[in-house]
Image 1 (cartoon, rainbow, N blue to C red):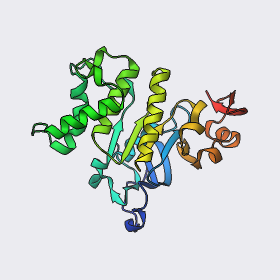
Image 2: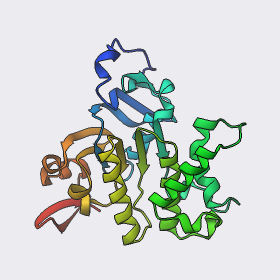
Image 3: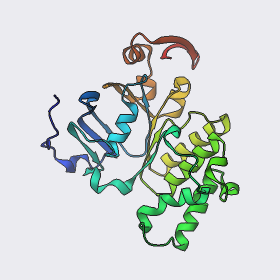
Image 4: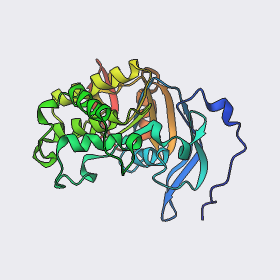
Length: 266
């Protein structure tokens, strides 16, 4: 049985320089560990990829940061404060298959959901809220679809709408769970451009990545994880055959990447 969470004797003041700090974080499902003893600090204004094989705990890590899952042990701080005091600073975009696309709602209303932390659940949206929604739809090039049912859109268009919803929250940290899955090349490039734009605004973007082909190009830093933290650092220093072998174990394939032969997971 895992030891239950206990408060760590940590001076939270020293962590305010970091957007996200994890200290010895362990999370389990039905007593089976999903991530074990993860410790790392992510500075603001970075685009960070989370890389690892299926079942490595990538999505679990995002959900733990959002406090959507209880911790068995450890601590997570957002700009030096507990997650409970920092939820408005974070926006989460889940995997597409976890969304009910048959729910009868139009695109603009989906994006307006991102304004709820600002307007509350009972109050009516104000003029500024509608302006933010319009701006965010324009930012992801979906203004022409604002009155369309969400279920009528393509996979790439749906992903853009959920990114707009996250933008409408005006959060400092965006957590994206496999945003490139099932999207076309144009949407992939649009998401990448958006991540860079957010970085230029000083925001932090944490992305679960399924395709290593662009890992060096897309991310400032990489987190390599297989339940435990394998490596964390600048993408070009971490994305090496040796560390990828350690991350993916025996599940390996050879592919040409960035002009050299790299070992990556299937």
